[in-house]
Picture 1 (cartoon, rainbow, N blue to C red):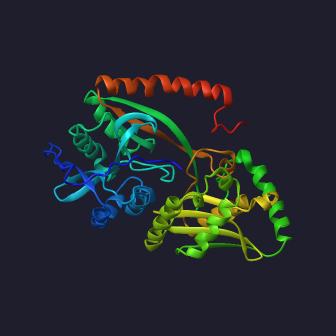
Picture 2 (picture 1 turned 180 degrees about the vertical axis):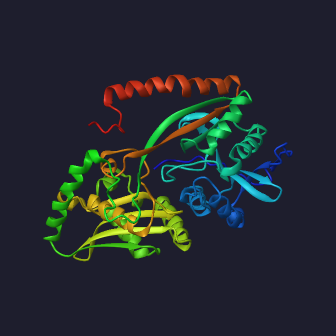
Picture 3 (picture 1 turned 135 degrees about the horizontal axis):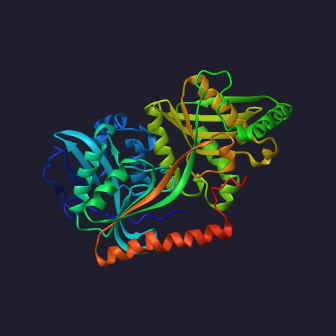
Length: 399
């Protein structure tokens, strides 16, 4: 499990940095917020996400709050808040760290996110993204506590990239480190064949699933269900199913760490209260053999986690569930299926479009900051290229 070095800050030791109003009429503050503060912001935060370019669950208050509660031990964290008058226009959730890139000693501000956050960005309304990013940057520029700002898995074209452009214009050093190529499918809404937009190159592979499905039916009663409320018993069943496979053996299953269990329970419970939860399951004789934890917002479905019974791998239960889940999305009028995470062949079977992400960095133009920049922008890419030349690119489909 990743370790997060978080600053135990209070308002007394970290006073709010008041930034003067800019010609754009936006004002920004850097504030250390507690869980109680986040609860107070929730109504206008939710409205802000709804006005954004991508109203995704990972930018919702419940997702960020669950991260603070579970991985932060409820400690306060620095947030950049951008307002126009009293109206909230932008939020940048950060956390203080004494390390850069996970290991290198540095005074840094990094995205309030981790491997379970899926993606991160400056949360803002899309209409005035550049002006909001400029105001957010002013709050960061006037804070002298950091050498490096790092944001992990920022989607291409995201608002944080606009913030980086303002940092670059101000003479700061910036760098991007490509990360995941997340596959997604444009679902053919209302079509009888919900798979018609899936990649043609894997049509034969999908066709072979039909015979596997028939063979599975020979084993007994096969059913598919979608649950949209949070059920602790179903959640525990997912944890057992995921933990019994290779993820559990490798220590990467949710159940391997109490903090991760707490994070998903808190996030999914609140997601369900807003109508965002979608838990799918494929069952054989009443026993769930494949499950998916997913979220739906603005007619888009996001799939952070799946699990399946590896003892039934010859039937491909995970892929059979995906086949049924996509058709169900088409029937329900959900327009996009985002598989999240890195590109892999089992995802490419269904989704041919990709959304690139990158870790984004801003370095203060000092001697120390320049040294960090040279490592991130020059040395590390050389190491990465050498690694891929020897071991191959893990996101290459290889066919």
